[in-house]
Image (cartoon, rainbow, N blue to C red; front, top):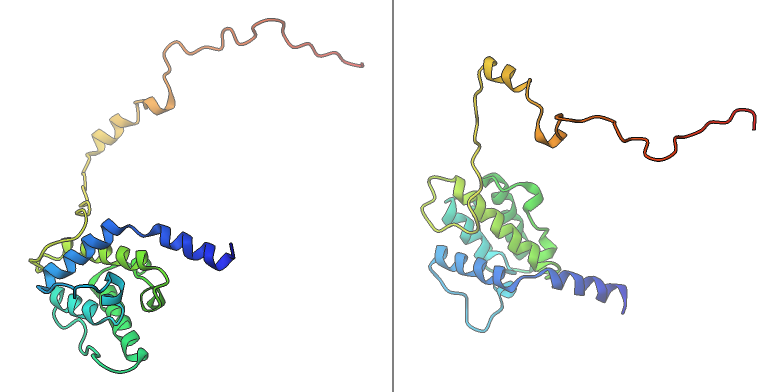
Length: 184
């Protein structure tokens, strides 16, 4: 098998059809439109129009102009505008897919992961009333301790360090002891 086919097979193996379907249903629920029958998930998303409409529904005005016609550069511009809007919305940069991952269908699983990252970001947006995608991110649980409580914690030996009850080195030299012979 050639290296290129091996890489493509590995990337295709990362795809999870269940996650793709879940992301598709989430997009359809937010936009209020179903994907066209007979078209695959990645083909519907390829030109970036659906993605731009999605981010504009979540946060109105995120993408000012959606290119509906033109060459491949106009469609790739839609994807780039979506990516910029994602970052402005609060999706971490490392969670955003590369343009070629979608437009050239290089890594559709990364596109789905980006949609899940957007879904996690919607949990934190109180102005967004729509459905969320994926599990709710954990909230910070800030705790305040008094100086007295902190000082009391210094006297306790944690169980991760083992126990100190009955710990000796007795029995360390079972059998014959080590003999050091000098001059031999």
